[in-house]
Length: 278
Image 1 (cartoon, rainbow, N blue to C red):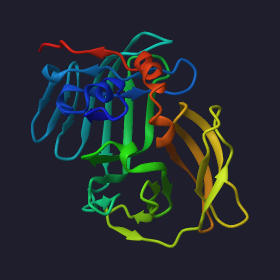
Image 2: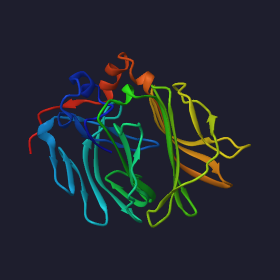
Image 3: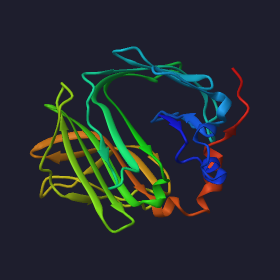
C-alpha cells in the first residue's frame, strides 16, 4: 500500500496532519511463517510523483498503461528485522469508473480501481512468490478517519462472475453506510442485494468482526493476516447468495485507534526516517 499522509502513522498524528507529503510510506506485509511487515514513515524529501509513478524513498509504484508494477526495497520492522525486496505486478482485467463517497460531504472516498485483477508476487526470499487473484483500490480523505467513523468492515471476494465488494461503516453522526457492489471482468459495477452482516469469531485482541453471509451460515477465518488492537485483516470464507467464496476481510475500530495510548505502540512498528535523499 502507498500512503501520502500515512493514515495509521503515529508520527503523522503527532505532527498535526498539516503536511501529508511529510508522512509518506509504502507498506508491505507478508503472511505465514517468517512473515514481515514494513511501514517506514518517510519525510517529504523521499516523495516523488508523476502521472504514472509514485516513489517513496527506495520503493515505487509505476502504471505502465496495462499493469501496476510495484518495486519494493524496504526494511521490515520489529520483531523480525530484515530486507524485503522484489517486484509485485498487478494486472487488472479492467479499470472501473466508480467512486463511493463514504460520508455525505465527500470528505472520504473509496475508489475501487480494479477489483478484479491478477497479481504476481516475486520477492527475494524463499516462499515469497505468488500468482493468483488480486485487487487494486484506494481511499482518499480530507479528515482523519476517527473524526468521522467509529467502526467499519470491508471485504473483497472473488466470485464466478468477477468479484464482489462490501463496505459497511458506522459514522459518528449516527448514520451508517452499507454498500454491496458486484464487479464483472469488464469493470462494470452494479449494486446488489446482499445478506445481512453476520458476526463471527473475534480476533486475538478481541476486536469484533462481522461479514455478509447467507442466512443460516457463519463466516469463518481461513488465515490470519494482520492482527492489531484496532485493526484486523484476514482471509475469510463466507456464503453470498448461495456461492461459497474466500476473500480478504478487514475490520477497523476507530474508537480504539483514537486512544492516545496506542500511538507509542504503533511507533515501534512504524519507524520514522525523515532525511531520505535521492
